[in-house]
Image (cartoon, rainbow, N blue to C red):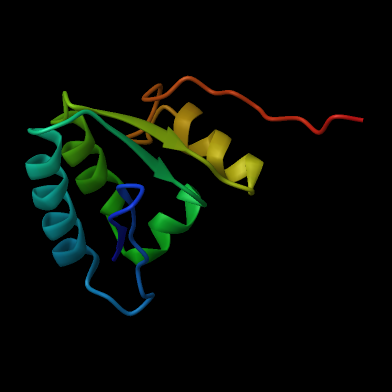
Length: 107
C-alpha cells in the first residue's frame, strides 16, 4: 500500500500468492474507516484480474462493495469480453452492478 501525503492519493497492489479473504477484509475495514471521514473514489484497474485470487471471491467482493455509502467505484479492464461477462452474465454476483462505459480511441 502506498500513500502520498502531498496529494492524499493511495494505491494498493496485491501479490498473486496473498490470501484474498484476508486482503479483502483488511482492505475494506481500512476503506470503511477512511470513508467515514470523507467521500472516496475507488478505482479497480484491471478488475477482471481480481477473480484470479480464488473461488467465490466475486461474491465476497460484491458483499463488501454493497456496504459502502461513502464511496463511488470505477471498474477498469483491458479484457473487454471478460469485463462484459462479469457485469452482464445473470449468474454473476456483479450482474448489473455497474453502468458500462466503453472508452474508445480518438483518431
